Length: 436
Image 1 (cartoon, rainbow, N blue to C red):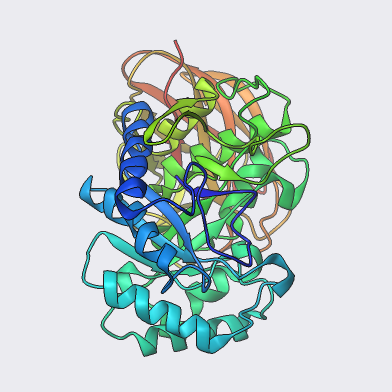
Image 2 (spheres, helix red, strand yellow):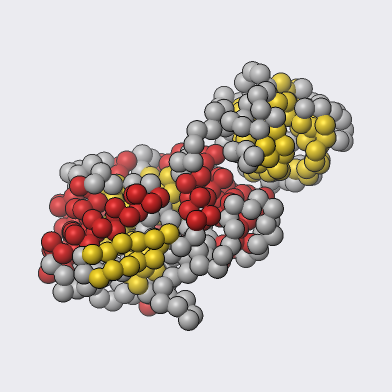
C-alpha cells in the first residue's frame, strides 16, 4: 500500500503523511505508524508500504520524526519502498536541484542501505525526461551508490512510470526491479480484454522484474468489483489488473491506502482503500470497499491457492495440433504452440480448477498477421467464439479472456480455429478461481 500526504505527495515542503502532524515527535510518529500498519496488515494482509521522500524532508528536523514511519514498518517485517517525489508539481517531472537530490539520497541510503527490508526508487514518474535521459540519470544514481544491491532498487518506467520496456531493455539496469504505474485515467474506456492487453503491453517481457507500484479505482461509490459481467470501466480495469497481477505473479502496491488527491466534495482521495479514524496515537483504519479489497487479495494471490492456475501449451497434458516452437521471444515456460494452418487445428488443455463453477479462462497468444477467430470448446461444447486480433508482431503477446463453466475435477478446454488460417501462436492458458 502507498501511504501518502493528504492532497498528494507533490509538495514544496515537508512530507506530512495523512494522520501525522509536523509537530509529532519520533515516538509519536512511530506509535501512529504502528496503529496504521496494524490495520493494514490485519484487515488486508498488507506486507509492504511505499513512502515518499523529498529534499524538504530528508535531513531536516522533521526527518528525524518521519523516520518513525520507516522504522515502524521494518520492525513489523514490512518491506518499505522509499520513492522520491519531485518537489512540487510545477517542476514538471524533473529534478530541479540535482545537488539537493543527491544529498537527500546519500542521507537516505547511508541510513537504510544496510537494511534488507528497505528498497529505493530514485524517482517517481520521471515524465519530464526523455527515455534516454531518464535511463542515463537512473544509471548515474546507481553508479553513485554502488553498495546498494540492484535487487533493492526500483527504476520507474518512462513517462508517468507507464512503460517499463525501454528501461528493461538497457543492460546497464540489469538486476534492478522496475516500477510500473497503470491507471484507468491514463487510457480511457476499454472492455476487460482491452485492459488486460493495456496492462501487459507496456510490461513487454519484463513482468518478472516489475512491481505495480501505483494503480487504483474508486472505493467509495459502491462499485461491485467482484462482478465479472460489469460494464463499468473501473470494474473492468481493476479486475483486469488484479487478474494480470496474479497470472504474472507480480507484486503490487495499491494507490493509496491513506492520503492522496482530494476529490470534489470530499476530504480524501476517492481511490483510498482505508478510512482513518481516531485522534492522537489512538488511530484505526477501516476498509471502504469490501469488493475492492477482495480484488487486491486476489491480485496478491492471497484469496486461496490456485492449483495449476497456469497451463502451458507445450507441456502435457496439453495437446498442440501443430509444432512446439521457441523462435519468437516473450513466451512463458519452454515454448508455445504453433498450430497448423487449418480449420480445427487446436490447442487443447486439460485443467483442474479448485472448485466447480464459473471461472475466467485467459488465452495468452501472439498474432503477427490478420485476425484469427476460434471456438472455445469446454468438455465438448462450444461456449464462445473469440477473435484473436493482430498483436502487431509474433513476439508481442496479449491475452483474451472468457468466462466458462467448469466441472469439479478434470475439464478439457479446446481452442479450435474456425478458418484455414489456423490459430495464433498460443503460449498458455490461465484459469481463474471459480465462483460457485
